[in-house]
Amino acid sequence: MNQLSRGMDISDPIYQKALKDLLFQLADDELCIGHRDSEWLGLAPDIEEDVAFSSIAQDEVGHATFYYERLAEIGEQDSDTLAFGRGSHERRNACLTERENGDWAYSIVRHFFYDTFDALRLEALAKSSYPPLAEGVAKIQREERYHLLHMHLWFVRLCLAGGEARKRMETAIWKVWPDISGLFSWGAWEEELLQRQVIHTSSLVLQQQWEERIRPVFAEAGIEWIEAMPEPVKKGRLGDHFPELNHLLGELSSVYALDPAARW
Amino acid sequence: MNREEKETRFIERIKAGMKIEATDWMPDTYRKLLLKLIHMHGISEIMGALPEKEWVPKAPTLKRKLAIMAKVQDEMGHGQLLLRVAEDLAEPFGRTREDLVADVIHGRVKFHNVFHMEAPTWADAGVIGWLVDGAAIINQAALLHTSYGPYARVLKRICAEESFHMQHGESIILALAGGTDAQRKMLQDSLNRWWESLLFFFGPMEVTESAQQMIDYGIRTKTNEELRQQFFSKYVPRIRSLGLTIPDPNLSYNETTKRWSWTLPDWEKFRKIVRDNQGPKSQERLNLRRFAHEEQAWVREAMIRSRLKGSVVV
Image (tube, rainbow over all chains, first blue to last red; front, side, top):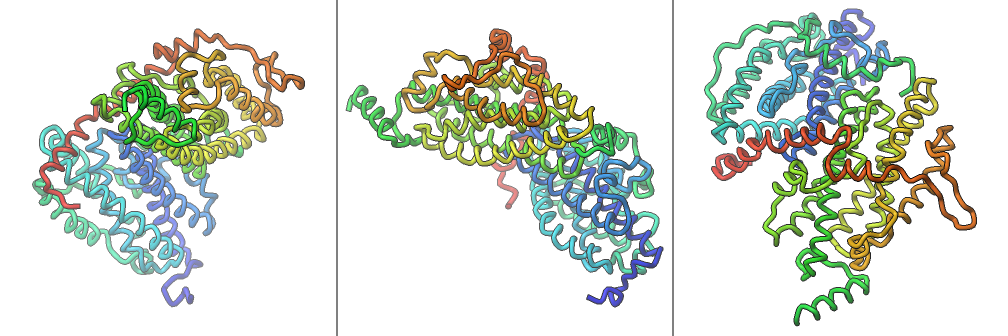
């Protein structure tokens, strides 16, 4: 394949910087959400869902591994060092993914909103000028489709159930809402990424697409749409995070940090 | 056919190596023994997810993280398969899945001693996979020829998965055994911690009345001590080949009798742990199960309600 014809020039230092930043966003998002998902192991509301949620967690960490490996390929350190050895200011995940699980309602709302965003992001990457990314995305999309179906089902049914479930879902939606806009940012290099066709959708359009997909689900679930979407308090894509990320990283790397040079 | 004739025919079928199925007639004693065994087995799988679950968020590489997640997921999956088998057996007693799961929280069903114990280091994640699952495979493989068909079929799948777990544990162990001094010490400490629990895991030396009944009914085919001996023969050489010391100076193999002699741990201490849920982690883990089951009952109730409403088409 003629890579240059698709606008890719990995020797261009700006292309490389922007691409790396994007790969970190993707990898860190998936690692954080997968880590949070895995905290439900053994604790989900029923045993069937425990098994299902773990499959999703494994998929997410698998995707993170894919993105970290692409970073290693273009001159960054090995995937384990990238996953376990970086501080919170170096992390590019959206803050939503680092938040603690809360109750089942919070976990479902967060995941459904994130998966809807992730599906749109993957579409924006499907024709990326960076072939390894476009190829990986095609495979990841197949898995994410099932996550989205699963979360959609949970979201609607818990909302429609009324009673305590409905109350908890409403509370969770309000709690998740201020963290949503932070998802759509492409970080510090959006313009460069667009110009070089690494991505094909701006953050503004991404947000509009997300709203278009979520609105009908709110209607289906009998939830009133929330008009205002506040700016994020912390800009995760720029390395600014809540203390929850520090706790997450502390736990994630607690064994690794005993001896980062050792073989584990 | 009167009851006695039925029972005679039932025993004849078992002796002929035929499998009993869920819908077949069976004596109440058989049903109760099976239910007790499979219920405890299923609940132990679910409680068994908890010690290792502690290490899922802390696994030190991406590969290990993925592997341990898949491993703990398998344990939950085994719990689900076994509870499905137990549910059918429990049906004539009017007991449901909800009851079977709630029983552990209320102390009405026991779970294996090993899952009451602490797992304070990464090496414990390895030892659980390698030796606890290794012991479980020996136990479960001996049950593969059980007279109850549904249990035998589920065990077949469980044993296949457990052998992956054993390899997963062994891989963690090999990395530690071949690692730094600190890693080797971590591993030795963990072996010291688990050894007695592993011996107790196989159960008492004597063949109890219910164990004999289970043998008569073809539910099990081997005694506890036979299985423990098998464990020694398989694992003692492997443990020693890694340069580890087994914390029992009396452990030795007698070439003439072809048997291992070993030091009996404080049996009463372990019995209490299982019977009264008084192990170092029993209450903490029961609290986690209570959280999962009781505090999230609202989720299961909501899913039943929204299904009844029929408003969602999948």
